[in-house]
Structure formats: C-alpha cells, structure tokens
Amino acid sequence: MTNQAKRPKEGVLKEEAGTTDREGFISPTIGELEHVLYFTTVPSLTKKVKEVLAAGRLLTPGAVIVWDETIGRRKGSKAVAKSWWAGDGSLTAAFVLDHLQGVKTEGYIDQGYTEQDYLNHLAAAAIRTIDSLSPKIPAVFIPPNNLYMNNLRVGALSYERHDLADILIIRLNCTTNFDKAPKEIINTAINIVEYIDIKQLPLKTSGTLTNTLLTRLMDEIPIAFSNISAPL
Image (cartoon, rainbow, N blue to C red; front, side, top):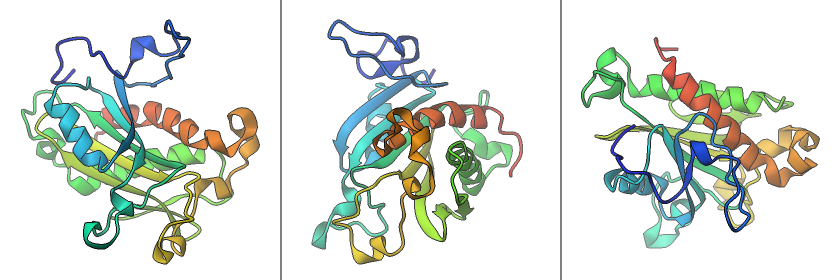
C-alpha cells in the first residue's frame, strides 16, 4: 500500500464494507479496492486525487469518487477548454493503483507500455462493465480516450502517472442531467440509461445506475490492471 502507514480516519476501508456504524450507516461495498474516498463536490477530480495522495490520505489500490465535478460547467473567463461536462447522474471516479513492484518511479512505462496502452486497458474494463448490463447498443472505444454508444459520447478516460501511484480516471454519462448543458454537449452526448433495461437495476429505478456501474468498476479495474501483461 502506497504512502500511508496509519489507518485512515476518512472514507471506506475494504474491511468495513457492508458493516453498520453507530448511526446506522451501512458502508458501501468497494470491491477489490483497499480504500475509497467520497467527495460531494469538487472543482477538479484530478487535482483532488493529487491532493489526497500528497497528504497520504489514500490507501492503494484505492479510488476517489466525486458526485459533482464542476470544472466542465464553468462559463466565460472561468471556462476550461475540453473539460468534461458532468452533472447530476454522472459517474466521476479516479482509480489509484500502485506502480509495478520493482520499477522505482517509472510505473508501467519502463515495461514498454505507453499512455495509450493504459487507456486501452481502462476502456476494455469500462466496456466489460457496461456490457454486464446487456445494453441494446454496445459501447465502443474511440481512441485516444472516448467511449461512444450509437455514435454519441457516453464517457471519457484519462491516465496520469503520479510520483506515488498511477491514476486512472473514468467519467461516464449514466443519467446525467443535460438541461443546462451547452448545445454542443446536448447534440453529441447520450446517457447509458437510454440503452439498458432499468428493471435489472436495484429497486428497478434509473437512479441506482451510477452506483451500480461504480460498484462493478471497483471489482473490474483492479483485476484488469493486476493482469496487465501486453498491449491490447
């Protein structure tokens, strides 16, 4: 586990998953991860991940989940070009994995992998997760970093190597509210919920889709990268 010697006092630990605290709150399942931090709202997920890593607040393999990332909704002089437009119903998650053992600070790169190789593996894991819901139309990966369904964008991926870990970020339109989105977003984006039968979801409601996909990704991504051996 990276950059963390003491038991963290925040977030959810793997050993606590499914347990109930004194206030009756049931800790969520976090799959193959050791530790997950949840944040209601942050301007930038990428900056938040770097912040918690630098402060030693996250065990690895771990994840940082943000329910509302605001950077893509900035307008005018505050707008950030090419930022992902997220809103209510979006999945915004960073999976933080240890560098390969015995490879100092160079991560997988010294093993002959490129940033695109990571994105290819991340995309394959994301597509397997979406496919687990038997969508009417399959998700496809269009390099370098976009996921599409029916020629409309449903997700974006990114990879960044930090001194302490590898950061894999996935952003998905699950049931995203596009009411206030710019026309260029509305005309080119779609939600995954449009292509699945919501009766298969918990409570048979679309409101559980984001957490369903997140829970499955928490199993899928650590396993996918622990078995990485060759570019796809």
